[in-house]
Length: 536
Image (cartoon, rainbow, N blue to C red):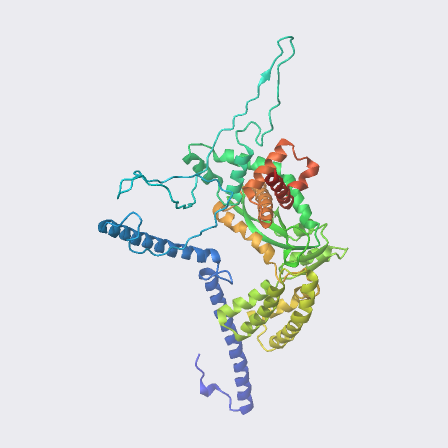
């Protein structure tokens, strides 16, 4: 709005006061405008930009795949031209006169020796010498190995139980008892049930898609039948799930996080936001004794009472993000036996988002300082906890102390309402938990261990969209626990699930021996069996 000079006062002091007040208002308006610009940039980045702070390797692989496909098609066309030229020129069988082909990049020597092999002999029809007419004799051979695939083979497992009677007396007819089945009265074996489980929870194929795959091979199975199999299998596998949960909560160092799991809410015509809480253990970065594992637990909401119940018996260091519910868990505990270690990735993320939107040099400085901490961690990863602690005291502590002073100094210079100030206050507010790693070599800088396990849930969620009910969501949690723990121990899920289902259903493994079915014990037992069989 233009200012009328005639309306201004003549007193210089009053004019100076008006100018000063105007400058204050202008400064406030500029800060508000900058804040709105930042908000727009963040919304645009959230809607159209990358969510991750790093390039997603899976998305990069998609682009590379297309390039490789185009290159392969071009190479195939070039090879066809070379073959046509060779035929027209009458090149010999040896191929010595053929134009040179482009050398292909191949995976030679990577085929497992355990794979079955079939031999195909490609021999000459005429074994007489074209010069003298004598008989050719073999002087060697060229061997080429190719990776072949036989589509999944379904077979019928016929169980015959002979019945016996005595010719000398009238005793009742006897026969061996029927072996237990994973599905009472059903036709599925443990291997088929495990195949369906892996398809749904590992390969993220909804049951209706699996039914379509079965139908292509002439087997008609209703989706409801497959759902019944999954439910019954989860009932059989519940003891293994409980044993993994007990293992995780018995440790003195664990990670915790949660993610959304939409669940159909009958009667409302829409979904509700359930939560999957994940608790993970991985001592490998500091050479700890505990086998790695991840435990998922379903809850209907994100109230702090759920982690409080899950962690009722936990004692030790819990590494988490900034969710206030974990802080409430510690405050409610009277035994003071849980220490919270916070995540530097979450603290860094606020600086990263501000820098991505504004290119702020202060945010860039904060990111550079945090990167120095991660560089030190890269050097000591895989070292014993005592070594990690001593290195951190010598190298990381001076950087941490300098960062703390720098944050306080910068916070006094910038607008208190800016997102940069919020990032600094977040870091300082969680400072005790963020610096706990300096005095304990077992603690990691971040919660990436548990976030990697949680990342598998959205993959299945994108295909299935939501769980059908709370029981279905509990099955998601149970199978996520089993699959994640198997993968953390380098155990192939299909083989493991097939074997432990057979052992549990048949009764070969008793309730008191369930621990032997946990992925790390199962892997060790099978390694011993393989050694014995190889020596026999």
